[in-house]
Amino acid sequence: MAEFADLTFRGRTVQLPVTVGSEGEIAVDISSLRDDLGVITMDSGLGNTGACQSAITYIDGEQGILRYRGYDIAELAENSAFLEVAYLLMHGDLPSADDFDEFAAGVMDNMLVHENLRHFFNAFPRDAHPMAVASAVVASLATFYPESMGARKGPDAMESCRRLLAKLPTIVAWSYKQSRGIPVTYPRCDLGYVQNFLHMMFSTPYRVMEPDPTVARALDLIFLLHADHEQNCSTSTVRMVGSSQSNLFASISAGVSALWGPLHGGANQALIEMLQYIQRAGLTPGQFVEKIKNKEAGVRLMGFGHRVYKNYDPRAKVLKKTAGDVLQKLGVHSELLETALALEDVALHDDYFLERKLYPNVDFYSGIILHAIGIPTNMFTAIFAIGRMPGWLAQWLEMNADPQTRIARPRQIYTGATLRPYVPFRQRGDGRIPRRRPCNPGA
Image (cartoon, rainbow, N blue to C red; front, side, top):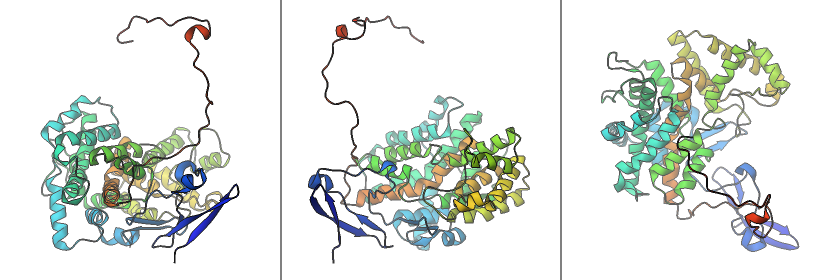
């Protein structure tokens, strides 16, 4: 039986349809509200607005639950690997052995980028941020695969998605090499997806780096745990751009740019910068926590709490053990990591954190791991982008397959000036008419 919610405004009542998800989430459909009552809803940050129906990822922030296609994240982290999870997100079900072999082979065969594209990297300044490079190069792929521009569903769209999943690690690794002035390293057919990324990052023409299995597994876990996270800022951006029927590469490039922000994908980089501040200031973790409690200007707490999770981030639980394994295996001893672990200990036993449910989140432990294995801080967000790629692709495919998809067009409440007449220059200020000034090239 259909269910409705009644909304009364200025003496008029309308019935709004109620939608219930498979996990019991409830939404009131307001799509006809403006037509019916002449009003819209306001929801700054869209924290209470459902923009789509999706079968990809389920989150219960109160209970600390994260599931991909119905599979619990902890179970996937223990038993699966990133490429299998990528298949799951993009196709909807876990693959058979034959399906996975074909999928993985297709990814590995596409890790090379067009040789002409390689020359793009030489045009960027040496200190270009890897996210700027990644966004630009991903968008430029549209010029190398023009035949895929109109493919938004079916085998051709899936092939484009698999191609992009394959090429992003190469693009990210090459952006790092370009920033260091080191020749790029090509992928190897005898290495897996994550191992190839580490190889392209750290091998040089005079020294081949064989990826450590513990490091490769830790990075695979980071990718897996970041693979999708429902309608976050970057994913919503991919859907919004894609809703205009923009091509895959343009849509994903926009997602990369959205991820770049320090409040989103840049959070684990901000964590390391916070730890460096603690060290430069000569503070103990306890003294830093006191500054947080006192809300001192310019002092920000990173790596704790989450916009969605009001419980322990389930991804952080997985990475906490992995961080310990990596540090032990590599024998890493650094003041920065010691500060991080001491801060974690303070936070887990301090009432200020416990009462506010400010537990270490996935950014805290991923930042520690990435720092320990030698990933430069400014590369952290680009690592996040590699992990999030399957989710972006899955969401883009789902959106294009949904017959209810419309071009995204949010409303607003206008708060500017009301109608006013145009005033000519002579009647403004000193009455002077502007004169064209000669150009000054290079000014």
